[in-house]
Image (cartoon, rainbow, N blue to C red; front, side):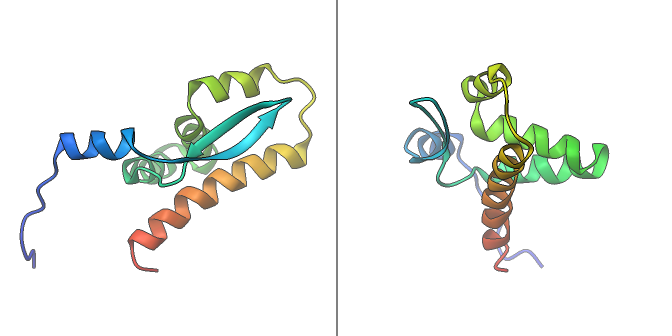
Length: 108
């Protein structure tokens, strides 16, 4: 039973995004690349949707790209010599950050 319809405001959502703090995810040389400290839950919803349609690997790449942003994504693609353990650390960090936020939102 729905207690009361949820009213969402695009203005409030935009303010949340504009005012969010960011935390470092990785550095290339001295350039810092960050992700939002609090993840937009719509990103987690998209991740869940893509996982069911295209599989977890495709969803994880899309999630990573969306969370880090175009500049960081381009920097990673231009970086040469990344080790397997470095890639795994990056992917796991983003996955845990987003999924942890989703689980927290679900009260788990």
